[in-house]
Length: 107
Image (cartoon, rainbow, N blue to C red; front, top):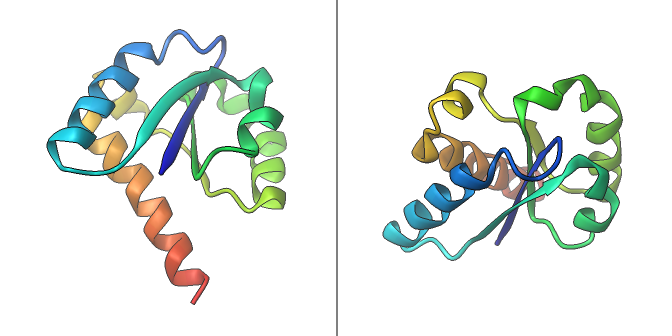
């Protein structure tokens, strides 16, 4: 499963991504987690299973959500508190919840 975190430049989420990758490995979750700039959305929609949007760019939510929904990729804004304290467990749980929700809707 490929989880993409989008932020302003793809750099502010790098520490969270590292922590999330470690957490996924510790839980034996087969996931690749990467961060990119929101400007890379179209390219990432081709590869992503889940997209999480950094809270600092939630002002772009409407356009980004529309594109993701048209591509059939589950998307959500990362919880601001979890993002601020780099709570990798909570953010990973949020991503997995999106994936599970999509699976239930597809049945």
